[in-house]
Amino acid sequence: MRMPFTGPTKPPPGPFRDGFWRSPLRDQRLTALLGLILLVGLPVVIVTGLLSNDAYQPGLGGNALGRDIHGPLDVYLFGWPTHPGWLYALGQGLHVTLGLALAPILLVKLWSVIPRLFEWPAFRDPAHALERLSLALLVGSALFEFVTGIFNILYWYAFPFDFVQAHYYGAWVFIAAFAAHVVLKFGTMRDALSKRAEVLGTPGGARPLAAPNPAPATMSRRALLAGVGGASLLLLLQGAGQSLGGPLRFLAFLLPRGRTRPGPLGFPVNKAWAATGVSVSSVGTSWRLHLHGARTLELTREQLLALPQASYDLPIACVEGWSTTQHWTGVRLHDLAALCGVHAAASVTSVSLEHGTYGRATLGHEQVADPRALLALCVNGVNLSLDHGFPARVIAPALPGVHCTKWVSEMLFEPVSVA
Amino acid sequence: MRRLRCTYGARPLHLIGLVASFALAAAGFVGWFQRPQDVAGVLEWFVAAIVLHDLVLMPLYALLDGITIGLLHRRVLLARAAPPAISPTPYLRVPAMISALLFAVLFPVILGLGGQAELAASGIREHGYLARWLLACGALFALSGAAYTVARARARARAARGRGH
Image 1 (cartoon, rainbow over the protein chains, first blue to last red):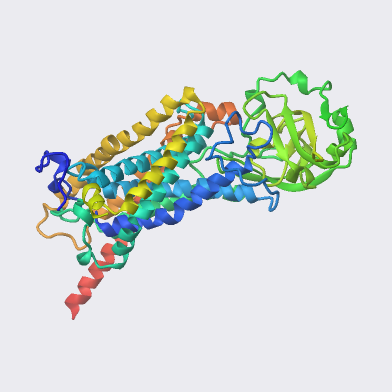
Image 2: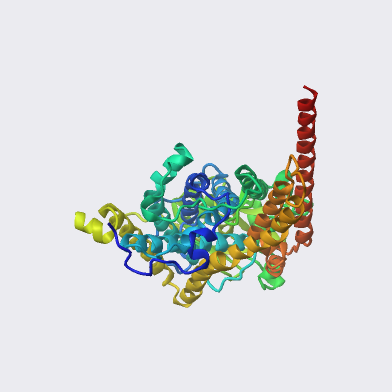
């Protein structure tokens, strides 16, 4: 016989008493079903999130943006591939779209278990106390990750901290608490879904999820599932419309990213020229591309246009889950590397005229070696516009959008070191 | 082993699993300390998320449901001599729930809170998200109304067939 080690036996009034909870919709099976959906969906969100971290290649140059990437949680397993070209668009599209679609499921799942927050006694034994602490981490980190991620894609930078670090390490708190929850509750979920309601017990004195004295039903559980499923589907379509873009962009009628204007230069802009604060004179006739490798040289835009040009259809895919595929023309990165005497480049760092967070980015040898990786001068048959990075910008397959540096003024090619 | 079970309250594996989970979560917390200036803000948001959701928003939407659709259900439906064959309540609740969930997830854009940042970054500021959301709500209620009409007509037809036999 276990004895409660805190609290009186009679619960205080209100939500601490079983009779307070009267919704006839709550029960173990509803919670288990919502839990199963989250169990299938959230690992995809987690894995695509971690892969996005890898795509930023934080081990190269200044890509980590000051983060210490040698910590135990900084999983940086491999260099980032360039095939298929839509790899990052797919991964990040899944991350954001599934995240949006799972948000209503999470909210209703939390509603379905809220009576457990007010269990009495608050702690039956040390095991119960630890499990509740773990649940606080689970709920806190889940809400934190969804809120920061969603606010970020909606342009509402209300949080007083750096998004990348908060969201990345918060994800690890979530992974830890989520894994423990799955291990502890998987059997309960399986039983709830496979057994009939009458034979389900409640484990070890926990408050039953089904109200002992339910109010008369005013809607069915099926209607509740239609509501949460409908909201989830609409949000899934929002994410898919943003991610696929083009003629399907209209589906994302409530998402602000990736807005398009007509014309060959009308595709989405994530950072407009006006936001850089750079003077227009610096992109005039005095602009030069400075190449650094085994030797240093300076090229005018005319000289770049006189070099062999290549054209490819490549997507710009952003961390906020939108993408857009355009027809780019420019000089191959490995041709530029060869020009400054680097025949096998380990990396290239592109420096922009703009000195913001992503004012410089380093690409690995996979990108430099890929013939589709360009310093683009034209797009869709016309010169780049200022908003799209005139005089020259980087575009490479499967690369996060912010690493496709715009307004490039300098490129530093690092040769492969011969040991 | 049995003594541990008695004092702790669960299998030893429960304890080991939770301690492992806490260790990993703690490493996440340590990661936040790489930016000491951010830690207070991160922890505030972490705790505020739990408190606001569980103790403010959830009671608030339960209350909102109770004083709108719940009240309508009690005053209008239960006051009738004979309850209708098809209750209209779910046909109100489902579109209301979808509209509310859309708002809960997308309120920053619906209320235009990110508009300035959007304009500064992309050079475009779209207006009218609030109207779009309201139109979506209207469409959902209209669809639900149509579904209710069909369900009621079918119930009546069924009842008429039942009387015919």
